[in-house]
Image (cartoon, rainbow, N blue to C red; front, side, top):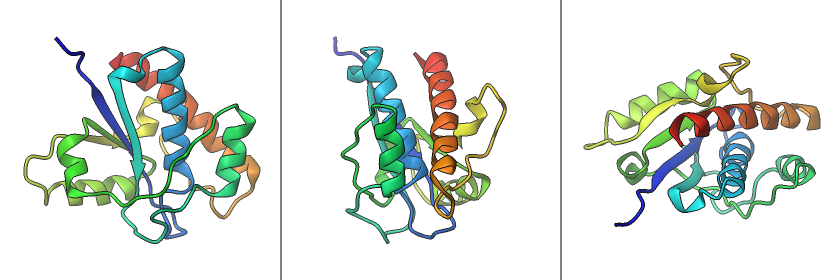
Length: 162
């Protein structure tokens, strides 16, 4: 019997109206590293996406990549737009702020057979920081803050669902 695979999609669209180049690829890369370190990569399918198509095919923001490299994490992620099929195939869609949550819930209501559990990644933060702010207009310190929040939340999420 094959092992069951759980799927997870990180989703964000910041005020920069670009999407999938800052928070969600950081969360995706952090979670992917955690499951790899725990030798659970065969049990998880992980991706990230945005509602906007502005950056489709582009790599994450250079500051996001720098932050990840600083922590020994590499990513080959390229931005993509969320699809109807994502709602039907992913078990979890975790987003970064309340605006993301509203948009995702609205979109999921238009999808027949939505399987995904949609919630804020911050609900898993042991420090109770519910919102992961968009660092796009900030500096490297803001990207580090996003990384730290994503790490805490992803660890807690993995502990709950592993």
